[in-house]
Structure formats: C-alpha cells, structure tokens
Image 1 (cartoon, helix red, strand yellow):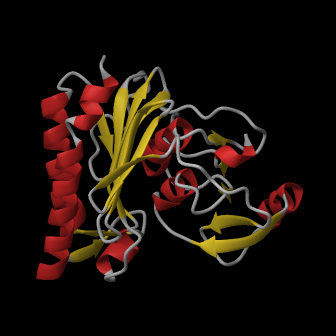
Image 2: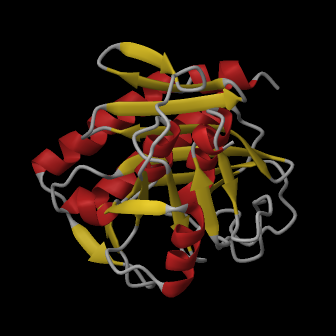
Amino acid sequence: MNLKNIVESLIDNFLEAGDLALQLREEGLTKKIKSDNTPVSNGDLEVNKFIINKISEVTPDIPMISEETSDNKNNLNLKNFWLIDPIDGTYDYINNLEEFTINAGLIINNKPVAGLINAPAKKRMFYSYDKGNAFELTKGKTINLSNKPFKKSENLKFISYSTKIKPEIQKIYDELGVQKNTKMKSSLKFCVVAAGDYDGYVAEPRAYEWDIAAGHAILEHSGGSVTDFEGNEIFYGKKDLKNSSLILKNKNFL
C-alpha cells in the first residue's frame, strides 16, 4: 500500500470539499438536532457524500466509518478502515466561525497511518502519510512540519476544549508545567500542536474515534506524541468507537 500516493491523490479533493462547505454555508444551511443531541447541517451531509465518493475511488477495497453514516459502525472485526468526520466542529460551522475541519484518517492494523485535515475558513490544510512526512499547505506553500524548527517554550501553551479545567486535567498541567491554555474546538487542535503554534492538549475520555484519527496521524508523523493519561498507545476500532483519555505533545517534549 503506497500511503504517499493515496494521500497526495486526495489533497485536491479535500480542498474542494472545503470550498463546498464554505459555499453551502454562504448559501444558507439547514440544521437539525441528531439523536445524540448534537447539531448536523446539510453541509455536513453534502461534504460527507463528496469525501466518501472520492475516497472510495482511491481506495475501493478499504471500508469507511463516518460520523454521519451508519455503515460499518457495528463491525467489530475491522482492522483496516477509514475514519471520516466531514465537519468536525459543526457548531462553529453553522455559526459562521472558523475552527471547523474536514477529516479523514486511515487506520491499518488498528493504528493511524495517514491523515488529512482541511480547515477551510482558516485556509490551512494538513496531511501526513508516515513519520517525517507531515505537512501544512497554506498560502500556496507546503511546509514539512517534521523539519520545521520550533522554539522551546519557556511558558508552555496548551489547548483546552473548555475554559473550565477539570481537576484531573489540572493535575497533568501541574506535572508538565503548563502556564497557559487556550480554548479551541475541532481537530484543528492536533494540527496547531503539530505546527508548533501550541505545545499540547489534554482531555479526559470524550468524543469519538473519527474526531481524532486524522489528527493523531498528523501529530505523530510530525514528531509529536499521542497517548492516554497512563502513557499508553491509542488503538482504533474499539467496540463503541469512543475515545480514551488524551495527552497530545509536540516534538519539543520528545
């Protein structure tokens, strides 16, 4: 399996998907609340259809699991599959904010081996296909995040999903010496840690595997790390597809 060819053949499709998402938002979105009490829009569903069609053309024999469709969600025997979140950060998307992303992570033997994330409102596209091969495409330039020099932070800047820091997270902050945290939604947090904009992220078990698979690949391939609170490696294809706890660190920690 040539991961480089797979990912590079999908980059333009992900940029197109970003344009589609912005166009649909400009035209006016229709919204509803799903059974899990989270919002979904016609934009989520149209981008989902577009991404699934393009990925199936490139890798027709690899099954897909998407947040917005039920296919394969109950198949506990999958080891090789795509995890897709067509719009991560739907709240931001439907409220004309910028931190939503379009995501696909390729899982082989229950580990993330490639990822694509487009943050179209931010005009930042990220992708990876192996260690040392994590990239940001922005302003017409391709930056290898693995080779990008970072300044060692004296005051560690972390991302949090809420302004209210839970005690178990504060404990880890104290152990690591985190001085500042900034609230951020969506998988963009993995990308900005990989890019060196921030130093890390900590979260208790929450959300689903499709929320993190692409970002996991990109951050690890940039030289960073993704573990649970105990330092264990994270695997995919769990029974309920729910995430474990998370600690993200950029390559300065390693």
